[in-house]
Length: 330
Ligand code: NAD
Image 1 (tube, rainbow, N blue to C red):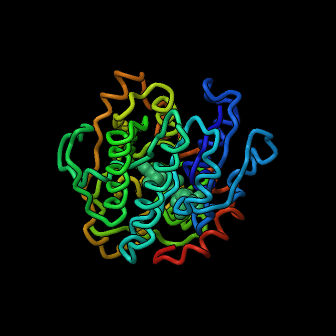
Image 2: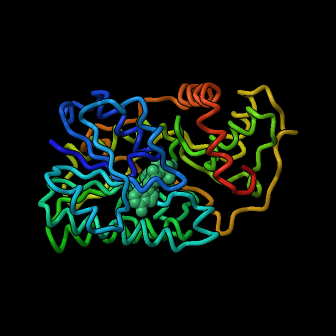
C-alpha cells in the first residue's frame, strides 16, 4: 500500500503523516507514505521531524501544478490524500492568483495523474467555507456552493473538478469538508496560534469587527481521523462533512484564550473587519456519523490546553515563522 500525501509538510497534512507513520490507522499500518510538498511559507520539513527517520517515508519537494513531478510521484500509488493548498483567507483577499493556481489547477493536475495511474482512492480535503455563511441550522452535503472569499471560491472550484473526474473518468474520489481546525504545528497567522503566541509575548490580540462571527472548532486529530474513515470506507463520488467540534463566537474564543493566560480585555485590540467576513459556518455531520461511525473525540478544553502547552514549549518553531508571516497583527 502506498499513500501520496500532498501538502504533507503543512499543519494538517503533517499531522496526518505523523499519525499514519505512528501506526494510528490500521489500514495503513504498513503503508509507504510519499509526501509531495512545495514548501511554501506555510510548509516545512521540520513539521515531519518526529518521523523523519521512518523508512516508510519519502519526501519530495515539488509543486502539485507540475505535471512531470506529479506523474512521477503518482506511480504505484493506491491512495491520494490531497491537503496541499493555499489556505489563508486574508492572503487570498490580498491576492488570489496563487490560490487559483494551486487550489484549482494543482488539484486538476493531481486528478489527471491519478486517473492515468489507476489510483484506487482520491480524497480531496476541502472546507466548510465552500458553503458560504449560514445564520441558523447546519449545511448538509448537498447544500449549494456559495463561497464568499477567493480562498473558498478556489476550494469550491477544486471540489467541482474532483466531482467531474469521478463523473467523467470514474476516478474514485471522495470530498471531505471540515470546519476550523486547531492544534500543534498550525502556522501562526491563523487565529488560535496567532493569539496564543501574541499572549506568550505579552502582546495584544487583534480581534476583527464586533467579534460575533461564529466558528466550529475541531481538533486536527479529529479531522485526520475523519479523513481516514473516508479514505477507508467513504463511497466513491460522495462528499462528507467533518465537524462537530465546539461552536464559539470569536469573542468567546478570545475570552477563553485570555483566561488561559490570566489576561483581561485590555489585551484585545479591535481591528477593522475582514472584507466579506462570513458570519457563521456550521456543517451537519449526520452522514459521516451514520455511515462511517465518526464522532469527534477531543474536547475543546483539553485540545486547547494541549495546544497552548505545545506553543509554550516550542517557541523556536513559531518565532521564525511569525517573522515570515508578515501579516497585520502578527
Ligand atoms: P497549510 O497552509 O498549513 O499547509 C498547506 C501545505 O501545502 C504547505 O505545506 C504548503 O507548502 C503546501 N503547498 C502549498 N502550495 C503547494 C503546491 N503548489 N504544491 C505542493 N505543495 C503546496 O494548510 P492546512 O491548514 O494544513 O490545510 C490543509 C488542507 O485542509 C487545505 O486544503 C485546506 O483547504 C483544508 N482545510 C483546512 C482547515 C483549517 O482549519 N486549517 C479546515 C478545513 C479544511
